[in-house]
Length: 161
Image 1 (cartoon, rainbow, N blue to C red):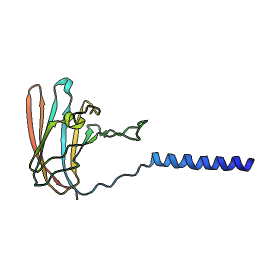
Image 2: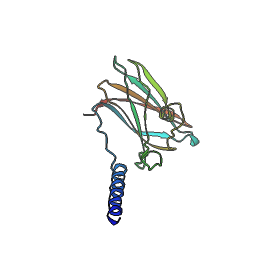
Image 3: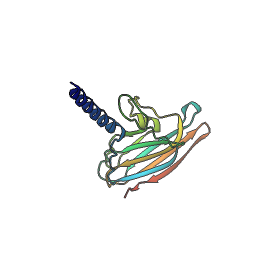
């Protein structure tokens, strides 16, 4: 009887340690080489009238698939936080495919939510990284607006290698 309880305890301990390791040490996916644009300043504070518009232009004859938008707040937060349903949540989303020589246009918050509205960026300023795993180049025009008007800046993608 004592040996059986000891064996059950060992089995339970092994299971608990295995589950803890799965949650604590999530594998980090290696990012494939691709094209990216880093936008050093964006703002999404609608309650005070500040917004960011983004226009992504596909500069190639192929469709851009798997474009990711990643947001990081001014304090460096990237959205990782414990969640009871999923281990982590991040300020990142996959955008719609962009056809050859086509554009994808929207506000920062609109592109992030994808029109579904289930995800929401914090009301903050920060930076954005746009990335896709292919070799096809793209350019981005960023518009930042507020109560007094707006300004814009153009960025060209570069290789992540």
